[in-house]
Image (tube, rainbow, N blue to C red; front, side):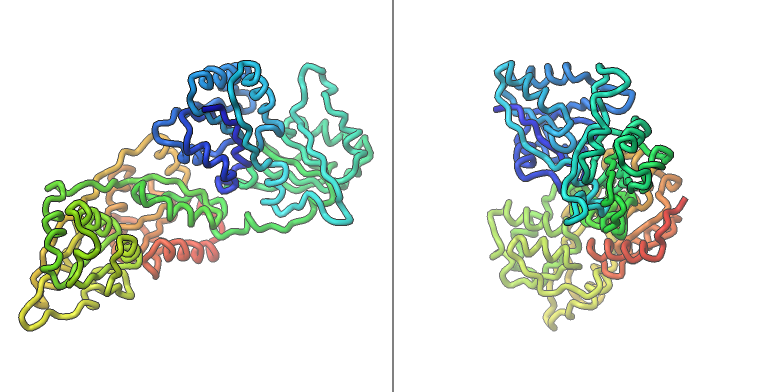
Length: 497
């Protein structure tokens, strides 16, 4: 057991190192600061204690000596303690002070380097800090100077100006006027390009471009990485050009299913906010009917599953009965869409029928009529669902056993989630139940400006509840929903007020 000083990187969760993820997964205690991405806390075990010690301009949650003492105290208990710090722990992050305190107390520690914002933020803004033949060096300097030395500061900015190459300034927003004046006094031209990248690598990223003579007049805010030099005029932008860049998108799927959609949205530059409005629970009978059906699969001609949740529950029931994929022998299997088929495939079952359109009507059309002697169908589905499929199958002569595989119940919504929804640009719905539960929990007045639905059934429910549907995915899958949002954004780039 030890204390791990882990660099969380500059903001994009994907920039956490493999070693950082490993130790987070084993943490008993996570001590994190303001610049750490709180989504990384999900990598820690649910039981891990999470302690915020963040600092912001004009506000200190916990002083540095108190943080040092906290790390020593928790480290002495033998727990695995992760100190999650923005950027790299040893680059202007006071990790050296924390390591020294641990060493003095005899507490074992390990330093896990992180990607510093000094390089990452310019890269995400399309600014290379070095360019062959034009900028062959870069200097990283803190603008948060030692206050004990007085107004003159502890950095010789005129000397920094004379070094040449690119200058990268961290924590310099509050002193940018004095810094700019000193750099010009050291010989840098007032026309020297400057770029300030705020919240670099995150969906909130914003880049302000100016010159050394005009940067102090710009509307800057912390935390920003300030780049001074010819390279600051380079604009190889890629991150801010992503289709959904900067848009806050609410993901209403169940907690266990949200990550796939959230990851896809993040990949397009969005700020996904997971607000699960439903939870999957056992049906009223506790799953007894499903277990009985799982033990009688060979007596059915077809097994029909209409959702990934239903597929997962059916496979669990088969396993609980002491069976495996061989229990499906003799029965053919139909899945309403590729997501459901993928869940079945993970359990060793390949669906015989997956319709081109992922709705009950298409699945009904894709299934054959029963033999002259009749036939049996097992339909495993949610406790509350449309009767289009069972009614249609019965009308065609099938004997249909409808079994409740699960039910959707309201999830608890936190005040933080309510605040996130209030500031969101888009809400996504992946089922009728997410529409119903979201409106029950938040009310129509809290619906974000843009409503996106995975398909016509979900969109129909949204319209019945009075919502205007802006995006309806023509391909009724998670990837189809994300693609539809990207297409929408291409023709409506400006955010709604």
